[in-house]
Length: 115
Image 1: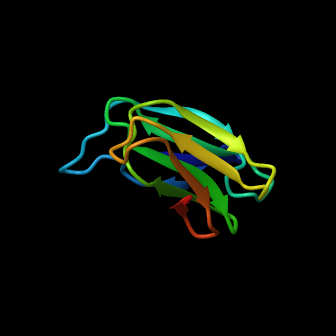
Image 2 (image 1 turned 90 degrees about the vertical axis):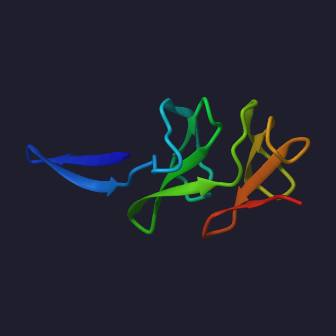
């Protein structure tokens, strides 16, 4: 995964991180959803490898573009819901190893399970 900035005819790398590793190859990574998951007023991207269900969130945190792991690989549906009770966007997925739907929210440093 590479994110580049264009300025004055030059490309500047903002992020360069391999998604696949020796023990896990991801072959069909797509942008699945766009939303402000971190609550900073900027749009973040949810990336997912369709065959494996592995997901990441691409966000700009403190001026740096960062790729965050989303817990568990889920092969089912994916939605982002804004819960008016707490005002935090919730990433909800199904088809996960954990039975039922899996919900995660941003806690300021990464994505954590919602009880």
